[in-house]
Image 1 (cartoon, one colour):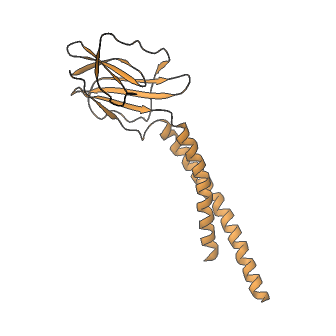
Image 2 (cartoon, helix red, strand yellow; image 1 turned 180 degrees about the vertical axis):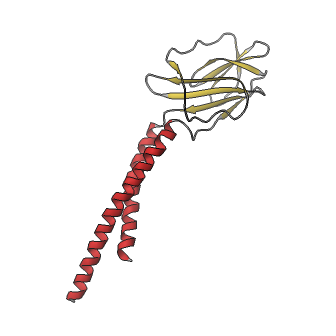
Image 3 (tube, helix red, strand yellow; image 1 turned 120 degrees about the horizontal axis):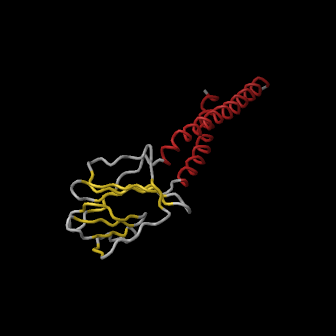
Length: 182
């Protein structure tokens, strides 16, 4: 019986030490991984270009843009607008160009996914001060209009760090139990 208690105590010590050690090591590794992946998320590397369709006439030039709308000029000089907040997302002919928002700043993403085709026109900007939205629009050679947007994934980064920490802790604990019991 005494021998059994020593063995159980030794197993318990190994179990606790294994859980603690592997838990800490796993948390450190997942947090370091998060620090590597976070800049990639913030630069929008994992975002893709969305096809917005083509106006009724072939688009040639972007004349105005914002986070939630774009206006393009066609070969004939007509201006078409699309409001991205409208679920229908239809191209509408307009008579005048909407002025640019003074809160827009030129956007240079080092890692942002480049447009995969040759373009007629392209624009990239950030919308600040209340939040950071990085948006790019492009008109492909065929007149199709595309949008790439990184609408401030700071929540995703925060959740990623929390999930990484607690996930690492749980994974490390499970791995520690496995090591201690073998």
